[in-house]
Image 1 (tube, rainbow, N blue to C red):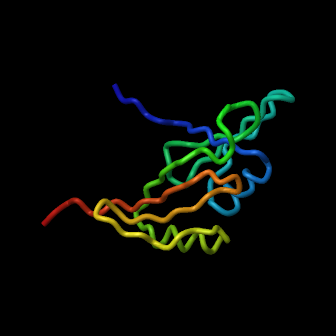
Image 2: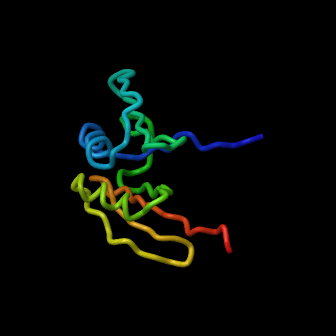
Image 3: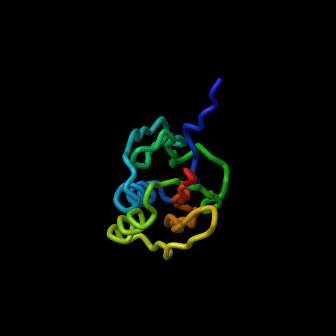
Length: 124
């Protein structure tokens, strides 16, 4: 049996500001934006090509805004950094380690994102 992570909740203070950041700057796709009632709003967004989405909103998570830490894997961390810079995201320089190359950024609430390019492990 496969166990797949499909949705990660990201705590935010301002749903509209966070929604704009994730769509316009991070380049995520808007899947749903549903106001269930005054206390519950569910916004689902998905990074390009990802099988896992994030949700932001009101009434969906008790964690404090800025407390999430999420990692994304890409084929080309340099190209990912270029895309984020072009969208005015404050993103780190590429940092290379034996286990991969990374860039880091945060959303307006301080939720932290790591973007990793996994090294080629195919061998000679």
